[in-house]
Amino acid sequence: MIDVLVLMLPIFTMIAVGSLFVWRGWFPAEGLPVLNRFVMNACIPVLLFSAITNGESLSDFSWLNAFTYAVGSLGSVAVLWPFLRYGLREPQAQSIILALGGATANTIFLGFPIAAAFIPERATEAFSWVVFAEVAIIMPLITTLALLFEERDEGNALSAALAALFRSPVVLGLIAGFAFLATGLSLPDWGDQVITSIVSAAPFVALFVIGGSILQFRMSRSGPRVFTVTLAKLFVHPLAVGAAFCVVFGWAETVTRDAILFSCMPLFLSFVAFCGRHGVGDVGASAIVMSTLFGAITVPIVLGFLF
Picture 1 (spheres, rainbow, N blue to C red):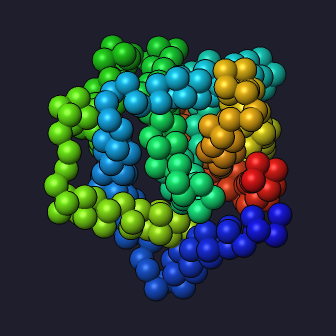
Picture 2 (picture 1 turned 45 degrees about the vertical axis):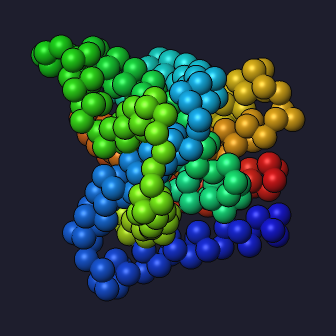
Picture 3 (picture 1 turned 60 degrees about the vertical axis):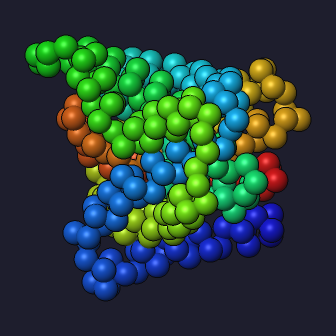
Protein backbone atom coordinates (compact mmCIF):
# COMPACT_ATOMS: atom_id res chain seq x y z
CA MET A 1 0.00 0.00 0.00
CA ILE A 2 2.90 2.37 0.67
CA ASP A 3 4.13 1.85 -2.89
CA VAL A 4 0.64 2.68 -4.19
CA LEU A 5 0.49 5.89 -2.17
CA VAL A 6 3.92 6.90 -3.44
CA LEU A 7 2.78 6.41 -7.04
CA MET A 8 -0.45 8.30 -6.35
CA LEU A 9 1.31 11.24 -4.68
CA PRO A 10 2.26 13.08 -7.91
CA ILE A 11 -1.30 12.60 -9.19
CA PHE A 12 -2.92 14.03 -6.06
CA THR A 13 -0.32 16.81 -6.04
CA MET A 14 -1.23 17.91 -9.59
CA ILE A 15 -4.93 17.89 -8.69
CA ALA A 16 -4.15 19.96 -5.59
CA VAL A 17 -2.07 22.38 -7.67
CA GLY A 18 -5.04 22.90 -10.02
CA SER A 19 -7.36 23.56 -7.09
CA LEU A 20 -4.87 25.93 -5.46
CA PHE A 21 -4.26 27.95 -8.62
CA VAL A 22 -7.97 28.43 -9.29
CA TRP A 23 -8.82 29.07 -5.62
CA ARG A 24 -6.10 31.73 -5.27
CA GLY A 25 -6.92 33.30 -8.61
CA TRP A 26 -3.51 32.51 -10.09
CA PHE A 27 -5.28 30.76 -12.94
CA PRO A 28 -8.71 32.08 -14.02
CA ALA A 29 -11.58 29.63 -13.69
CA GLU A 30 -12.85 30.74 -17.08
CA GLY A 31 -9.61 29.40 -18.57
CA LEU A 32 -10.41 25.81 -17.50
CA PRO A 33 -12.77 25.18 -20.44
CA VAL A 34 -9.92 26.17 -22.75
CA LEU A 35 -7.60 23.60 -21.16
CA ASN A 36 -10.43 21.10 -21.22
CA ARG A 37 -10.90 21.62 -24.95
CA PHE A 38 -7.14 21.32 -25.50
CA VAL A 39 -7.12 17.90 -23.82
CA MET A 40 -10.34 16.69 -25.45
CA ASN A 41 -9.73 18.14 -28.94
CA ALA A 42 -5.97 17.71 -29.27
CA CYS A 43 -4.34 15.40 -26.72
CA ILE A 44 -6.91 12.61 -26.46
CA PRO A 45 -7.66 12.13 -30.19
CA VAL A 46 -3.92 12.01 -30.88
CA LEU A 47 -3.41 9.59 -27.98
CA LEU A 48 -6.14 7.28 -29.31
CA PHE A 49 -4.74 7.52 -32.83
CA SER A 50 -1.31 6.55 -31.51
CA ALA A 51 -2.65 3.66 -29.42
CA ILE A 52 -4.59 2.15 -32.32
CA THR A 53 -1.93 2.60 -34.98
CA ASN A 54 0.65 0.84 -32.80
CA GLY A 55 -1.04 -2.42 -33.81
CA GLU A 56 -0.09 -4.26 -36.95
CA SER A 57 -3.66 -4.64 -38.27
CA LEU A 58 -7.30 -4.09 -37.37
CA SER A 59 -7.42 -7.60 -35.98
CA ASP A 60 -4.80 -6.56 -33.39
CA PHE A 61 -7.21 -4.15 -31.72
CA SER A 62 -8.57 -5.55 -28.48
CA TRP A 63 -12.17 -5.89 -29.64
CA LEU A 64 -13.03 -8.56 -27.09
CA ASN A 65 -11.64 -6.42 -24.26
CA ALA A 66 -13.77 -3.46 -25.36
CA PHE A 67 -16.99 -5.46 -25.65
CA THR A 68 -16.36 -7.24 -22.34
CA TYR A 69 -15.82 -3.87 -20.66
CA ALA A 70 -19.06 -2.57 -22.21
CA VAL A 71 -21.03 -5.61 -21.06
CA GLY A 72 -19.69 -5.32 -17.51
CA SER A 73 -20.45 -1.59 -17.43
CA LEU A 74 -23.99 -2.14 -18.70
CA GLY A 75 -24.38 -4.71 -15.93
CA SER A 76 -23.77 -1.86 -13.49
CA VAL A 77 -26.47 0.15 -15.29
CA ALA A 78 -28.84 -2.82 -14.92
CA VAL A 79 -28.39 -2.57 -11.15
CA LEU A 80 -28.55 1.22 -10.80
CA TRP A 81 -31.35 2.03 -13.25
CA PRO A 82 -34.21 0.04 -11.63
CA PHE A 83 -33.16 1.21 -8.16
CA LEU A 84 -33.39 4.84 -9.26
CA ARG A 85 -36.64 4.24 -11.13
CA TYR A 86 -38.56 2.13 -8.63
CA GLY A 87 -36.68 2.56 -5.37
CA LEU A 88 -36.28 6.35 -5.52
CA ARG A 89 -39.26 7.00 -7.84
CA GLU A 90 -37.13 8.87 -10.37
CA PRO A 91 -38.81 9.59 -13.74
CA GLN A 92 -37.81 7.21 -16.52
CA ALA A 93 -35.57 9.51 -18.60
CA GLN A 94 -33.85 10.93 -15.52
CA SER A 95 -33.25 7.50 -14.02
CA ILE A 96 -31.66 6.31 -17.27
CA ILE A 97 -29.31 9.26 -17.65
CA LEU A 98 -28.29 9.09 -13.98
CA ALA A 99 -27.60 5.38 -14.45
CA LEU A 100 -24.95 6.41 -16.98
CA GLY A 101 -22.95 7.49 -13.93
CA GLY A 102 -22.68 3.86 -12.89
CA ALA A 103 -21.12 2.82 -16.19
CA THR A 104 -18.63 5.50 -17.23
CA ALA A 105 -15.57 6.67 -15.33
CA ASN A 106 -13.21 9.63 -15.52
CA THR A 107 -11.14 7.63 -17.98
CA ILE A 108 -9.56 10.54 -19.81
CA PHE A 109 -8.71 13.02 -17.07
CA LEU A 110 -7.91 10.61 -14.24
CA GLY A 111 -7.83 7.03 -15.50
CA PHE A 112 -5.07 7.51 -18.06
CA PRO A 113 -2.69 9.47 -15.78
CA ILE A 114 -3.07 6.80 -13.08
CA ALA A 115 -2.69 3.97 -15.60
CA ALA A 116 0.44 5.64 -16.96
CA ALA A 117 1.89 5.54 -13.44
CA PHE A 118 0.88 1.97 -12.57
CA ILE A 119 0.95 0.10 -15.90
CA PRO A 120 3.07 2.30 -18.17
CA GLU A 121 3.77 -0.52 -20.63
CA ARG A 122 0.03 -1.21 -21.13
CA ALA A 123 -1.60 2.12 -20.31
CA THR A 124 -2.06 3.41 -23.86
CA GLU A 125 -3.44 0.15 -25.24
CA ALA A 126 -5.84 -0.36 -22.31
CA PHE A 127 -6.94 3.27 -22.58
CA SER A 128 -7.87 2.79 -26.24
CA TRP A 129 -10.26 -0.15 -25.72
CA VAL A 130 -11.80 1.37 -22.59
CA VAL A 131 -12.54 4.65 -24.39
CA PHE A 132 -13.89 2.72 -27.39
CA ALA A 133 -16.30 0.86 -25.09
CA GLU A 134 -17.45 4.11 -23.47
CA VAL A 135 -17.83 6.41 -26.47
CA ALA A 136 -18.86 3.89 -29.12
CA ILE A 137 -21.15 1.61 -27.09
CA ILE A 138 -22.12 2.74 -23.59
CA MET A 139 -22.72 6.48 -24.00
CA PRO A 140 -24.65 6.31 -27.31
CA LEU A 141 -26.86 3.51 -25.99
CA ILE A 142 -27.73 5.14 -22.66
CA THR A 143 -28.18 8.68 -23.98
CA THR A 144 -30.40 7.44 -26.81
CA LEU A 145 -32.58 5.53 -24.35
CA ALA A 146 -32.90 8.66 -22.21
CA LEU A 147 -33.96 10.69 -25.26
CA LEU A 148 -36.50 8.06 -26.26
CA PHE A 149 -38.12 8.23 -22.83
CA GLU A 150 -38.01 12.03 -22.63
CA GLU A 151 -41.56 13.37 -22.56
CA ARG A 152 -41.04 16.44 -24.69
CA ASP A 153 -40.66 16.22 -28.47
CA GLU A 154 -37.00 15.84 -29.37
CA GLY A 155 -37.26 14.61 -32.96
CA ASN A 156 -35.39 11.46 -33.91
CA ALA A 157 -33.44 10.49 -30.79
CA LEU A 158 -31.20 8.02 -32.58
CA SER A 159 -30.25 10.51 -35.29
CA ALA A 160 -29.51 13.20 -32.72
CA ALA A 161 -27.33 10.84 -30.70
CA LEU A 162 -25.40 9.64 -33.76
CA ALA A 163 -24.89 13.20 -35.03
CA ALA A 164 -23.44 14.26 -31.66
CA LEU A 165 -21.33 11.11 -31.53
CA PHE A 166 -19.66 11.63 -34.87
CA ARG A 167 -18.89 15.27 -34.08
CA SER A 168 -16.88 14.21 -31.04
CA PRO A 169 -13.08 14.67 -31.42
CA VAL A 170 -12.62 11.48 -29.38
CA VAL A 171 -14.64 9.48 -31.90
CA LEU A 172 -12.82 11.16 -34.78
CA GLY A 173 -9.51 10.12 -33.20
CA LEU A 174 -10.74 6.52 -33.01
CA ILE A 175 -11.96 6.56 -36.63
CA ALA A 176 -8.74 8.14 -37.88
CA GLY A 177 -6.66 5.54 -36.05
CA PHE A 178 -8.63 2.61 -37.46
CA ALA A 179 -8.59 4.13 -40.96
CA PHE A 180 -4.83 4.69 -40.89
CA LEU A 181 -4.23 1.21 -39.50
CA ALA A 182 -6.25 -0.28 -42.34
CA THR A 183 -3.89 1.31 -44.88
CA GLY A 184 -0.92 -0.60 -43.50
CA LEU A 185 1.20 2.55 -43.56
CA SER A 186 3.46 3.81 -40.76
CA LEU A 187 4.14 7.33 -39.58
CA PRO A 188 7.50 9.00 -40.35
CA ASP A 189 9.83 9.77 -37.44
CA TRP A 190 8.86 13.44 -37.33
CA GLY A 191 5.19 12.44 -37.08
CA ASP A 192 5.95 10.17 -34.14
CA GLN A 193 7.79 13.02 -32.42
CA VAL A 194 4.82 15.37 -32.83
CA ILE A 195 2.42 12.75 -31.45
CA THR A 196 4.72 11.99 -28.51
CA SER A 197 4.96 15.68 -27.64
CA ILE A 198 1.19 16.18 -27.69
CA VAL A 199 0.42 12.99 -25.76
CA SER A 200 2.98 13.77 -23.05
CA ALA A 201 1.07 16.94 -22.16
CA ALA A 202 -2.24 15.15 -21.61
CA PRO A 203 -1.85 13.67 -18.09
CA PHE A 204 -0.55 16.83 -16.44
CA VAL A 205 -3.04 19.20 -18.05
CA ALA A 206 -5.91 16.78 -17.35
CA LEU A 207 -5.10 16.54 -13.65
CA PHE A 208 -4.81 20.33 -13.40
CA VAL A 209 -8.27 20.64 -14.99
CA ILE A 210 -9.76 18.19 -12.48
CA GLY A 211 -8.34 20.15 -9.56
CA GLY A 212 -9.69 23.44 -10.84
CA SER A 213 -13.03 22.10 -12.07
CA ILE A 214 -14.00 20.35 -8.86
CA LEU A 215 -14.24 23.77 -7.18
CA GLN A 216 -16.84 24.86 -9.73
CA PHE A 217 -19.36 22.18 -8.77
CA ARG A 218 -21.72 22.60 -5.83
CA MET A 219 -23.36 19.96 -3.67
CA SER A 220 -27.16 19.84 -3.91
CA ARG A 221 -29.69 18.48 -1.44
CA SER A 222 -30.50 15.49 -3.65
CA GLY A 223 -28.88 13.19 -1.11
CA PRO A 224 -30.32 9.74 -1.92
CA ARG A 225 -29.80 10.06 -5.68
CA VAL A 226 -26.30 11.48 -5.30
CA PHE A 227 -25.31 8.78 -2.82
CA THR A 228 -26.78 6.02 -4.99
CA VAL A 229 -24.96 7.12 -8.15
CA THR A 230 -21.70 7.56 -6.22
CA LEU A 231 -22.02 4.12 -4.63
CA ALA A 232 -22.70 2.51 -8.00
CA LYS A 233 -19.76 4.26 -9.61
CA LEU A 234 -17.14 3.47 -7.01
CA PHE A 235 -18.27 -0.04 -6.03
CA VAL A 236 -20.83 -1.63 -8.36
CA HIS A 237 -19.09 -0.60 -11.60
CA PRO A 238 -15.64 -2.10 -10.81
CA LEU A 239 -17.29 -5.22 -9.37
CA ALA A 240 -19.44 -5.72 -12.49
CA VAL A 241 -16.51 -5.09 -14.86
CA GLY A 242 -14.24 -7.33 -12.81
CA ALA A 243 -16.85 -10.13 -12.87
CA ALA A 244 -17.25 -9.86 -16.65
CA PHE A 245 -13.49 -10.05 -17.22
CA CYS A 246 -13.09 -12.93 -14.79
CA VAL A 247 -15.70 -14.90 -16.73
CA VAL A 248 -14.12 -14.18 -20.12
CA PHE A 249 -10.40 -14.03 -19.29
CA GLY A 250 -9.93 -15.18 -15.69
CA TRP A 251 -8.49 -13.31 -12.71
CA ALA A 252 -4.90 -14.26 -13.49
CA GLU A 253 -4.85 -12.25 -16.73
CA THR A 254 -3.43 -8.72 -16.50
CA VAL A 255 -6.25 -7.40 -18.71
CA THR A 256 -8.72 -8.09 -15.88
CA ARG A 257 -6.80 -5.89 -13.46
CA ASP A 258 -6.36 -3.22 -16.15
CA ALA A 259 -10.14 -3.11 -16.66
CA ILE A 260 -10.82 -2.81 -12.93
CA LEU A 261 -8.24 -0.02 -12.67
CA PHE A 262 -10.14 2.12 -15.17
CA SER A 263 -13.61 1.21 -13.89
CA CYS A 264 -12.85 2.16 -10.27
CA MET A 265 -12.24 5.81 -11.22
CA PRO A 266 -14.74 8.52 -10.13
CA LEU A 267 -17.34 10.07 -12.41
CA PHE A 268 -16.27 11.88 -15.57
CA LEU A 269 -16.64 15.66 -15.55
CA SER A 270 -18.99 15.82 -18.56
CA PHE A 271 -21.57 13.78 -16.66
CA VAL A 272 -23.07 17.05 -15.43
CA ALA A 273 -23.75 18.09 -19.04
CA PHE A 274 -25.58 14.84 -19.82
CA CYS A 275 -27.64 15.19 -16.64
CA GLY A 276 -28.39 18.85 -17.27
CA ARG A 277 -29.90 17.90 -20.61
CA HIS A 278 -32.63 16.05 -18.66
CA GLY A 279 -33.06 18.47 -15.75
CA VAL A 280 -30.92 16.68 -13.15
CA GLY A 281 -27.70 18.65 -13.58
CA ASP A 282 -27.55 19.42 -9.85
CA VAL A 283 -27.56 15.71 -9.05
CA GLY A 284 -24.85 15.07 -11.63
CA ALA A 285 -22.63 17.87 -10.31
CA SER A 286 -23.02 16.68 -6.72
CA ALA A 287 -22.25 13.10 -7.72
CA ILE A 288 -19.07 14.25 -9.45
CA VAL A 289 -17.92 16.04 -6.29
CA MET A 290 -18.83 13.15 -3.97
CA SER A 291 -17.34 10.42 -6.17
CA THR A 292 -14.11 12.39 -6.60
CA LEU A 293 -13.77 13.03 -2.87
CA PHE A 294 -14.54 9.44 -1.87
CA GLY A 295 -12.51 8.20 -4.82
CA ALA A 296 -9.43 9.69 -3.20
CA ILE A 297 -9.92 6.92 -0.60
CA THR A 298 -11.35 4.05 -2.63
CA VAL A 299 -9.07 4.27 -5.69
CA PRO A 300 -5.79 3.79 -3.69
CA ILE A 301 -7.42 0.88 -1.84
CA VAL A 302 -8.44 -0.82 -5.09
CA LEU A 303 -5.02 -0.19 -6.63
CA GLY A 304 -3.34 -1.60 -3.54
CA PHE A 305 -5.45 -4.74 -3.95
CA LEU A 306 -4.69 -5.01 -7.67
CA PHE A 307 -0.99 -4.24 -7.66
